[in-house]
Image (cartoon, rainbow, N blue to C red; front, side):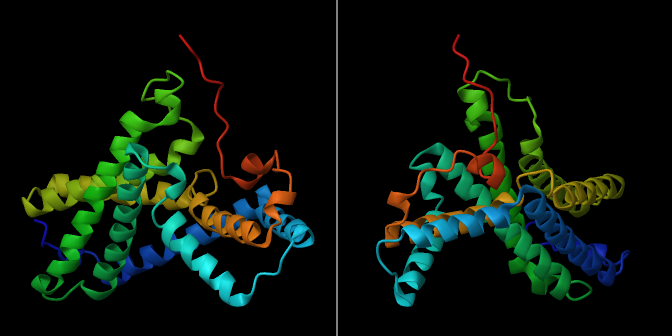
Length: 264
């Protein structure tokens, strides 16, 4: 099953061009949702104003070489390993989910654009990567959802409590879960179930990518920029001279307002 390319099998009934068009449409939805959210929440304005204040408060000039080094280190260490979460289960679940999702999405695009309608065995490596990415996403995502969410563990809320900010992780888990179920039932020759899980897989993708404006999807684009800006500000000394913006988490989209912790 892991070596089977489900999209190549699907290409026997659905045109590869239709699948490729769906991928392109999802990318367009991401771009539109992110841009609309940035305009509505004034994230670009926040970035610009914060950078302008930092420049005025800088105590030293950071050269281009040092900037490149800081940006590279931020991408590799802060973003690539989610170091802000410290060491522990929460960080491990995020890393599993993050790299699983990246692998899942990349391999999906490769399989659809390069390995539909051809010899199925030639895509075995990418097919295994596709399945591995989906499995990692499920492991990290379900671990986080059932056991590690802050509002569940610290505020005594039940695991099934859902708010708007949860749309991203739930839709992502649905995509990965239904993708694996679709692949398994297709491999087993269970035609009816395979088409049912395919339909649910497509629907969950529409929710995930079509709901960018309402979910934390765009959070993935904001956080790298915020981390880079923070480290550059620390390097030029401006961060020490700037008061922390009280409205930044809500305006910038980096935090989600939760209820005050309850102690029983």
